[in-house]
Image 1 (cartoon, helix red, strand yellow):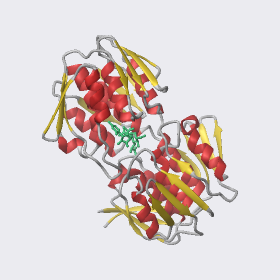
Image 2 (tube, rainbow, N blue to C red; image 1 turned 30 degrees about the vertical axis):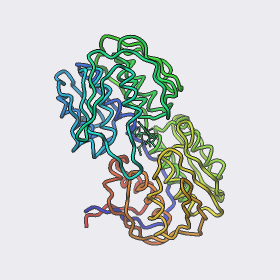
Image 3 (spheres, helix red, strand yellow; image 1 turned 135 degrees about the vertical axis):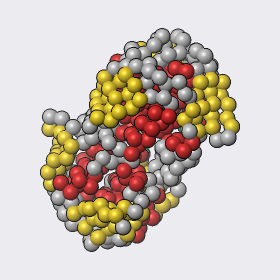
Length: 417
Ligand code: EPZ
């Protein structure tokens, strides 16, 4: 069993390289199923979720080779359309093979992803969209099956700007006959990166990054080479690591325009964040003040930064309120922060935080990816030692986080107990 042990109190200083985006890599890897060819992806982060998606692609008949920061995917012989439960249950994003398989092979049988720590996470918007594109959808035994030889372009309206549904439907639409419009689409930078990748393969997509995405179906897509964007949530996590330790760090390879809402909120709280030719400089000199936050779909405050921001507010003097509007149960980190002495009260989708002078190190347990990042941030400033268990959650989305934080001066180590 591996644990992470942190001795709090060190101010972070120096430079940290931001890895490629997990949430861009996963849909783009799935999108390679839309072609019979070879694709080379670069700036791919070495993460557990990327390894899982590679296993899903291999299960479907693809050849996937990791070479350092590159991934070579050969989908020439993809002929299987079943994504099994044992893989889908470990990573919801496996569901993103649905749209490409349906478009390319005319059928797909994918295990329902099931819920996870942060919520039930249904896929009704995905399935409704596939039906609009002409697919026959059936359910049984925990699996969903869709089939249709030749999808037909359609007008699709998403009740909620779901990131995954937008990605699945945009991928399916690339090979559908005629035009497809997705209204109320998600606008995350990862959607834009996926659309850029699809267009480089020969797709005809316009409007990604706005709430209306228009696609004209084409006959086939070709393999290509592509470098994915940097991970804005990893960058946001290191920005908060600098703020919470009153540090002075430079993030290399991060794009500040993908983090506007977080940067605005941190400016309001008194954290100095500057864009210096492709690098982000973070300095928290003055006392930070408590600010309220409400998570929203992009470009609003990212739900994936909510837990990390709460760690910062838990030691910021004053009262702050964090409202989680995207997921129904994304406060799993609160009980662990309480163990470290935080003063937080949950009222439905709102958490009211009373900043305290300092947190105390304690044994705590990670419950989901971003909650585990929040516990690391809390451990960096807590008095004494914090020991975090179940760190497999962390390995899903943060590449070499112990090494990166240690290089910035944190007293952090990974031990096997
Ligand atoms: C993506 O998940 C991200 N994952 C999540 O990041 C992120 O938190 C989320 O978008 C929101 O930004 C990847 O990109 C791999 P959604 P996704 O569909 O696509 C409801 C991380 O930490 N919904 O936008 O699953 C759903 O229940 C992860 O990196 C439906 O009701 O998110 C949720 O409440 C965590 N029906 C809300 O929409 C549907 O058919 C947002 O879900 C689909 C979604």
